[in-house]
Length: 90
Figure 1 (cartoon, rainbow, N blue to C red):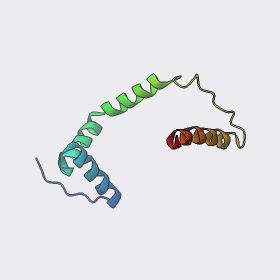
Figure 2: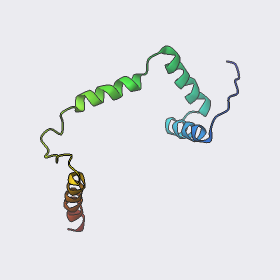
Figure 3: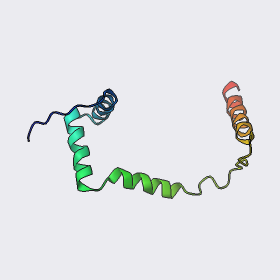
Figure 4: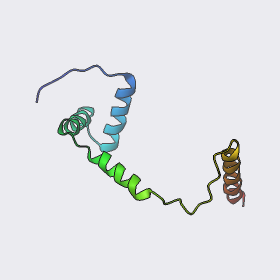
């Protein structure tokens, strides 16, 4: 292995640290894994995410979704909030 120094933005460093902690590895290991995936030209997670999206298509077809008229979305969300809130107080 060769040592390489790079400059990262604070947000990038924080994100790397979260990933590393979640996977139980070092920041450097996360960078190596990300580079390996990028250089190989395939991203298994992307394929998995796209498969999940494909599988979810049409799942909510049976639900009554309001028209996209002005105010309809807010009314719909208000109804959902009232129904959800009623269960909490009961």
